[in-house]
Length: 314
Length: 61
Image 1: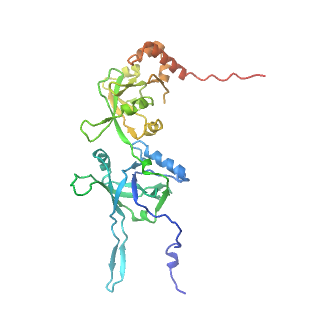
Image 2: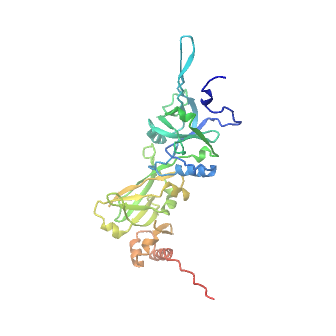
Image 3: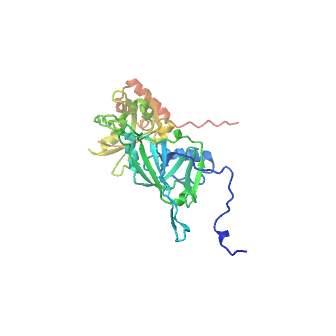
């Protein structure tokens, strides 16, 4: 009988019929969002929790950012390194390091958003074409994305010879997250469920009249004078939601908004502050106007946008 | 969060309106494209929106 430690090396190696395997990547879901064991207790709960994190406000550490749908994948995995001794016995010196290059379709406006992730180490869930979301369990048992180093390269000008695309590259920080730590959520998502928000910025199209301000809502684009005013699409619905306003050095003092209306001529909102409180402010005082959150907007069927705040001046 | 009441497409802060007289409300919101009569109707709606609910009269036998 052999004296051996081999029985302690690993675990049983019986294969499970119909075991999960990785499909073709369909979408990257980027961000530090974590799902606790109660979140993933069942599929429906995890699905709802995923969608909630897509609609968090920018700045929330749990927010997830879906990238554009993937149109092509190139395996850029760094191969394992091998060496051999004089008589030919081959040793594996270093395990492979997973890496991938993805082709995505992104206009110049979206590229300005994607490029902010360039060079960042960031957790990424990978959604594949079998509706599986690949992640890992962290030390606390939370379902999270493994950390990858991200690269973003813009679409170049065409050369009339080869199709061009925006390139997203990812390289895995810890190779163990690809095997030992890997877990998968078998969802019923489609890529149309995993869509990012568009940023809406607020501006004043004309000078305010005392306590009455005009607020325009536009989506910036890469086109000169081409910002998209969302008033016609969502103006009335957004005017019916609750906005808040604050003053003070840390914007912690509430300033009452007495009414919000649509201005069909200016294609903007008319926001009125309580005149007594407004008059009491010093000249040049700053007012922070805060919009409804993406979750509140979404609940009111104002979907796919996040409205920023604006600092107004008395 | 304050309670808002929608009248003719304008959202009015009902809680703030309830702290004002009708005259003060109409004067404050006169810049909207509403007539004084409409503003008074909006004021009335705001007051009703923040009126405390009446407790049901207990039935005695």
